[in-house]
Image (cartoon, rainbow, N blue to C red; front, side, top):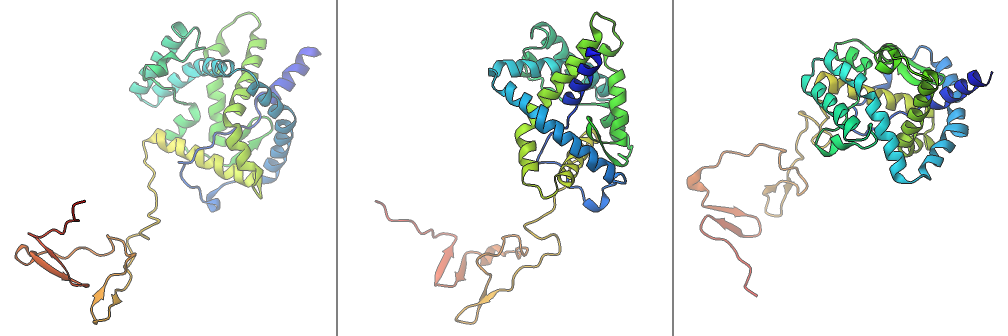
Length: 306
């Protein structure tokens, strides 16, 4: 009975929610979020929060007390184990340059990097990139489907849940037979969960600590991040709104009258508020401005020499 109990506990710890938080993700309108199973999802979220608070966070803090090289070596080793799945999806997405880079990383870090403990490839200009079958489906136009928050697994969608299953069976470690395979698989899941919690810890804690509705905040943030990853896989560039100019319909402020009845533009008017009028070269030699300041093509006021 010892082995099943240990497996249940460690998998629960490993698969607690630790989503990555990024600032450049596209905005997801709350009106477009599909969450038909919200009641179930909120219950699962509460369970995961309790596990994270009582089990996962203490373990993550314990790892933070370890010397830096240990945590970095753990992260590099787990990243190297994920490269075959990344390569598989690079090929499915017909991205040969990325696939070649993934193979280069796997070979370099497995050999020169002592089994992936050292990330030598990134120093050679070949950084790691995440990939999975969920992104592959998104690249080819599959919609995400309803939002799901599963106990132990955390946030996902119908599309990404299917992607997780394919990623599992496309991992070579899933098919290879070797001694203590079950223990190795559990250990990989445990340490992957710890590493993910450490990487996302500060951002995740800051996101949820002050949220009025942590569930809705995490749901919106996760969907935004995921949509940004799918857009990147599709090669779509996010178009940000013009929050300063007010869009193409913005109108310049009316001019302010001066004491002599003439009109000058307001001092805070943007330079692009109105198109510049064509200038006649013959008439540009001298222009009168308020305050009896004259700009001449052949005259430049200079400060007195010190």
